[in-house]
Length: 212
Ligand SMILES: Cc1ncc(COP(=O)(O)OP(=O)(O)O)c(N)n1
Ligand SMILES: Cc1ncsc1CCOP(=O)(O)O
Ligand SMILES: [Mg+2]
Image 1 (tube, helix red, strand yellow):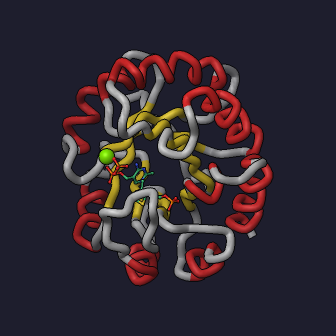
Image 2 (cartoon, protein in one colour):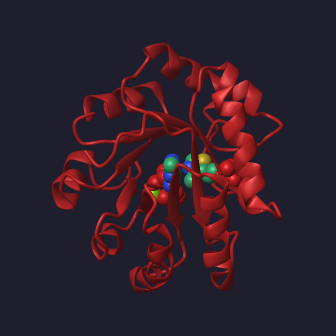
Image 3 (cartoon, protein in one colour):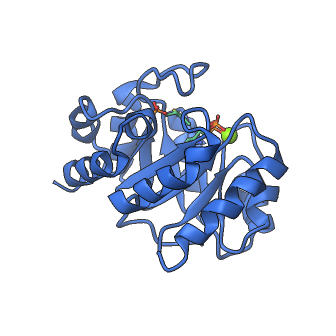
């Protein structure tokens, strides 16, 4: 397993759909300054070589920190750098195959969108470091996905998984209390954080709310 994420409460995603290339380093610094426990690079429109070029500029920011840097979708880009993690979706390679290719020391996460997929993540607990549950609410960041609602958050919370899990999708400061009341203890917020002028302040607000 790549890391013990039980103490993590806020997972930030540096999404190139929101942050232009020239601002990625400054935005990543703000995510780290705010106390993001995990940071993912999500670059859906870029090629592997472009992702590697971006990662070349981001990786040095993580030196001396304990914050895992995760690459969305692209195992080839992740494997180009020591210690980078990977996030896979339901249509990507299986957690078992991803773990076999990554080796033991990197963080691996999986998206889930139903009770069955959440149970599937738990069945792969030996390969995974975390799973994500969502999208809880409709979101322009992932417009093709049907929201799973707070019911799935409640369902997963009632399973009391030992494997850390994060609620994701349409989560904003104004609806965070509903997500936490449904039983989530860890969350991901993309647009609410990235679109803020000072992302570090917003992350600090999320962390305070998640811990209270
Ligand atoms: C932490 C986290 N959770 C969910 C996702 C979504 O992954 P996926 O379903 O593969 O969709 P894309 O992000 O690849 O469009 C994620 N990236 N990170
Ligand atoms: C990547 C992803 N996977 C499920 S929802 C989502 C996007 C979440 O973005 P936002 O926090 O802006 O709704
Ligand atoms: Mg994916």
